[in-house]
Image (cartoon, rainbow, N blue to C red):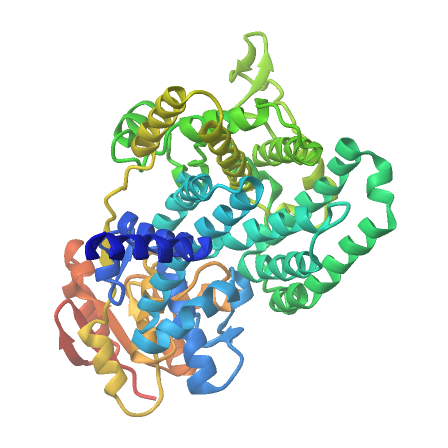
Length: 586
């Protein structure tokens, strides 16, 4: 035997000794880099998408870093934005789990790096967790890798990644929770670790997203009810079942209470926006949303946009995919000798159906319109014909705080999760049944479809860097807040990001919750402030007015503004490309 053959045999032997999870982890890290390329080359200065919610989460990571390591105070309230009254973070999602995942990277290279690292980690971890679940069910790593890929890069996750919804990317904890819950509530769990894992992952869900927390608790209640259907009432009434379920909830309780504390505190002072249940109609999914390909797919997206109304694409890109659907149907229909899997399979199918119905919201929709019943039949949209209420309408009426779920379409992630688990089992079945030729043909066909459906989109990037005027503001001595003209709502997230650079409180920053005083302050500024507006700014400690010259030039009004500010006794203090700074004397 040659030395080359000996080395090759040694390499094969060593690779067989590497645990499966190292291979899976390496695969999902490499896949994440490839599917989001070239983001890894721009991690520290650019974000995917356009200016929007991504800026809020970049700011959030930067604010956590500053509050904890510079100011040494609680980050739950900030006076950097919505000055002078400040803003309670619980007016929006706080998502400490995603923020803390990005914080070490922020300390190394800034909040943009922290945001991107947290987002990319969610892809790798979501894929890995689902791969783990399928591997436990089937013993086939390849089936787990395929299923994990389907979930991590599903249309739902990619859409929210483009939109910058960092809190909705933390789906790895959903996978771990439901996998652990199945293992913990089996008649004789093999390990006592599973109840602990289920409780901790439920707590992490609460620390990730308020939407996911509420929806997961609702589906956990449905979970127990389905056990009554699938395994019988006696199964649920067993003492061991009740003790394990109670133990899971008790383990989760400290983390859940920690996650809810900011919201309880903000609600006590009326700082939580009140949602109208009617808003849920526009945030509801349609059954067609699970069938239409993603409009972000580079091969099919243009066709979808040309033929269908996808104005709400961020929330309703819920396509299950042809390959995943076929493989999942195989898992459902394939014969099995395992009674445990038969029960789990039925339970998964019913749970997915429940999540699907809840994602449709309070009233049935078809494409982008409500289904109404009238003289023209069940799809009539004319006149004041009644719409078709769904079970969620009862939850909006009777379940406390359910009206806060203004986007029930987000239940779709649970449907996608379960379909991907079943798809993994289906792929494992196809890999081990039938003739070799039939297996190769089926798998080759499904993999070809997968390539089309998961074809990497070309990311669009926007750069995040401080303006020259922000660095100048940072160098100025003394205190003093900043106001920017025009005082409009557009771009408030970008102004919040700039506070991380100049370090001064900003009158703008977040319009999710404006007090009457702050609304009056913003309205008084308008496009051209008057003497009363300047006096109001002076009274609350605003020192600098930054004027967006390009904006005023577009409406040919900069000369008018400059004359008005001069008449008010304000002189230009500094000039930069695109901006002028005026100072208000104390």
